[in-house]
Image (cartoon, rainbow, N blue to C red; front, side, top):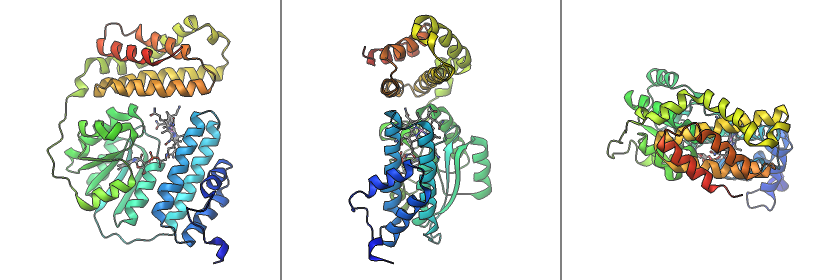
Length: 344
Ligand code: B12
């Protein structure tokens, strides 16, 4: 090994260099940096969490600020996955603890954070079954019956997946396997995880490693499982999702004249935004938390603004959904709170 290859994460510019490499889709360059850091004695955990995970968060910011296209973000994510695989290929720890199943909930495509979690747990001696993105609940349960793990680690990165997360948590616990939940979809401090019946929550892979090594299964109270599914407003919004979005799109064209000049791509993006409005509203109703909806509105407002869409468009968009839900007090209150957040 040459002296020049003794790199550490304290080297000036190493994070920027890695971000540039993933942004340019330079797979070989990115893997080379990872290899050099491992050669330099940097622990693999630090490379995965600080360099790869940290860079992905930056990628997200650059996309949200409209500085990177979706395609560039996708390409960068693929390189990060490649770099992560390169770290994993250089480590080999024999299982000495229990067995863990790691899965993203149904409809959840953010697999990279769970891949990091998988490698971190593997390094700590767990036998890991990594099921990846978008795992339907029934398949997850079949897998549990076949493999008998000590714990399921369930990821939810976006709050719209919370109802599915609830179903998965309930099914895992019914199968006798405790659940550790994670991902920002479970809300600040994981508050919805507990409410939906998870045995534990961890903010990140390092905390999960710590918790599973020391206090598992946790001996707390049995989590309370309120009957969210019985909520009439949630059920109405989910059942009528296509009509709510379709009607909103038609009303929008009248209420927001600039839309008449939209090309197909802009119309598709608007339809996607309307779908997100309805989906986040449904999730907020499901857990009875206005913040799930208002956080989404604040975030969408900034994303749209970065793309030259004025706040009034979002306000009109919320109004088109609100006008269809007048008989639903909780939904109306949430939409009103969302509208209040929008300036201009
Ligand atoms: C890459 C990416 C994607 C990729 C995912 C590819 C892949 N293979 O993972 C693709 C393109 C598929 C994608 C799609 C979407 N994405 Co996206 N995505 C991202 C991005 C840029 C990076 C995610 C990532 O890898 N982060 C790095 C990891 C390391 O971050 P981390 O959260 O710190 O990870 C730790 C914890 O979350 C925790 N953890 C996670 N799961 C678990 C589970 C357990 C059990 C435990 C204990 C811990 C744990 O441990 C991790 C490691 O320490 C983020 C931006 C960001 N800042 O994260 C947006 C982001 C998550 N996406 C977002 C959105 C909106 C979407 C889409 C809806 C976009 C769209 N218009 O279609 C879709 C939704 C798809 C779906 N239904 O899942 C938003 C969510 C915003 C919100 N309001 O909630 C974000 C935050 C972007 C942003 N800044 O605006 N996305």
